[in-house]
Image (cartoon, rainbow, N blue to C red; front, side):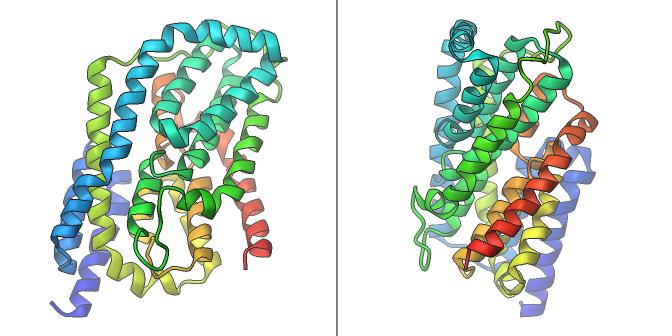
Length: 349
């Protein structure tokens, strides 16, 4: 197949991958299977099939899948104690201090116990608070920003970080478990703390409201197993997709100015940022480009519900509507995008 046909075919696959999950309900509902088909098509068009790639696709999702399953079971076992723990923390630190502490733990801890489980924990905490609906929506949004940022610090945290480490594990980056912590940790940790502070702001004046957000239902054992299986298929599909789209990324995306890569990723507000990471990240990128791409994906991913996993999980469990989410998340996300861009442009050489 000629280079032109390969690039055209990959461009079509990338276009379908970006457009159909947002526009076709059936594709959105069966996203993992759809991405698996797109990944197989991309690898076939690029003619990049190998035993190494198949082994990587089968083995790389194991760690995050195990984390989702095991931590999900552990949280299910201790859920009954959460109310008493929250009460003790509130008595010791005050409501605002308790919320700041919990959001910080969920944000940074999500890199170990995964963004999915952190979002489930968040839904349980918000349900127990019984504050005004307006405050709880804002709390959920800021907490999901914190989780979305913090989960990217290790390959256990979320599919995006798993995919990035898998794609960059060879030369010249030689990414290992701590690669993302070294690469973006200095940018992510302050962002998590800022989100925690904003989540706690005004807590004391929020007032009690029995009409606040309520978790839809508790997870069953079958729910946990099903979720773990979907994560495995999702990550495997993205590994195939990322490998197959490598020729397209190296030919075009690597040549884009760093500022263009950053702002182009604002589309992550409406498209899953792990899918975009699989399509964009390439070993040919510089460390500076990778940092800008990742921070663009992570920040803009919090703006709307489809942008990342914690948004999707929390909004579904708490019944937050798209308009309510956007009203609380878009102004903050836009300001954070601009602030990060200015600081990184000045400080990253």
